[in-house]
Image (tube, rainbow, N blue to C red; front, top):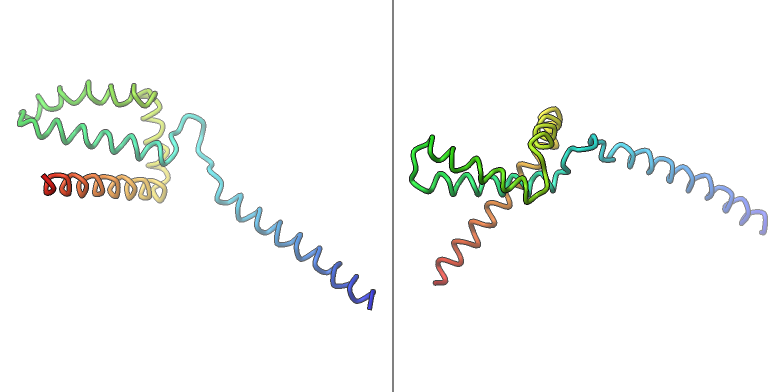
Length: 129
């Protein structure tokens, strides 16, 4: 009886160890391998939402396209400064995600979801007044 328990316990150890090893291998495949200086998906999506909102404000001013672009450029710089991000970081980040389109698609999905949520909240706020 004691031998049977010992043998079951000895079998459980290798199985548990195998599960741990396999789990860590799959986990390592999912690790974030972004180079240093590349914004994380949440950081980039938040920044992109702010940029899209600034672009919408610039376009909604009724200014001609070239004037809207002149208005938007300083706004964009303010967004970068507020986020503590340089233009070179933005370029490196965009290039990284262009080279990793599946990740970029997820970021855009998050941006679209966030903008849609803001729009719904604004519509609700307006209709409540």
